[in-house]
Image (cartoon, rainbow, N blue to C red; front, side, top):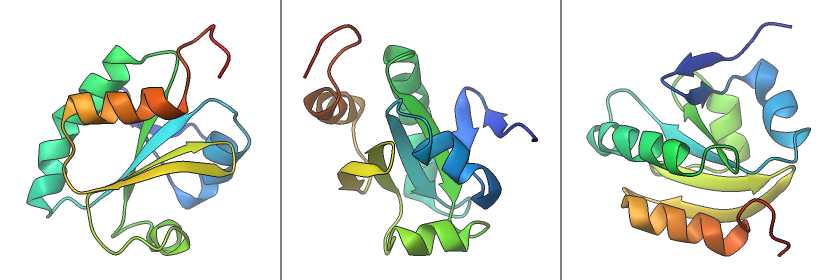
Amino acid sequence: MRQPEIHSQLIDLKKDTFRQIVIQDSTPILIDFWAPWCGPCRTMGPILEAVENELRGEVRVAKVNVDKEREIASAFNIRSIPTCVLMQGPDVLKVLVGVQPLATLVNEIRMHVPPKGEIK
């Protein structure tokens, strides 16, 4: 099985790797639905990298290019980008639409995913 592409430390999700990386792994994952032509999506890039750095080992961060992975975007009913979806296994924990500040993303993740070693 081929490995997913990585942009910095962010996982580039594809249709053929989505189930393995998201659904079959119980590690929480924040998925950013984006497009390269979207200015606000480009603004989110460094924020998502900061989330990944701050919460490394607790939450994975991934991206889905809605132009290339239309089936995934459609399955999540993505109507506006950027949209971030926090998941754990098959469960959607939170959906955030629009550019989100780092503190907001970290707080939302912390509300739904306890820090490593804690039980929620």
